[in-house]
Length: 173
Image: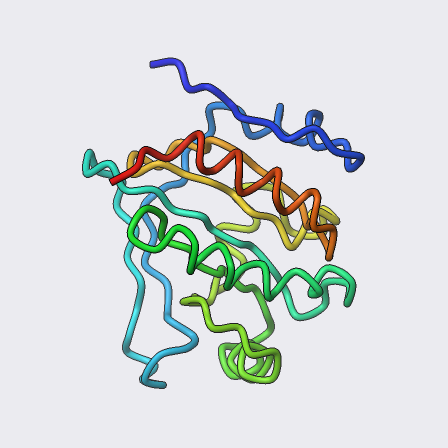
């Protein structure tokens, strides 16, 4: 079926960016969890389904610009605001799981974060070396991409617009 692509007007050119993601699907994946109890055997499994869950996947790398990481508190805010309506999950790419784990701990990234081994999802979506990360990709339970939004940095106005957009897309429970 037809998937409506939701867009936030801003000065980042996200309308052009969105066109390359329109109608794309996030595939099944099974990737290691970075934070949690510290066990390397824990993994996060995403299998598209009909369960009406929504996911906000935040793609980032330790080498993204520092001003982009000014947005990390906003990730926590999204997790807290949409708790029960939206699963906020960080997807990090790095040279190793330990490097990403160190980065997540050092920067107090408290959202569930998984390790994109070999940049599988980054490559599939064309995000590696794109200059778009950290990028927030809103996905429904069937894996359909509903929105892509680059970093809002510390811009409260852009963050409030993004919260309003998510509120409109995701049904209240």
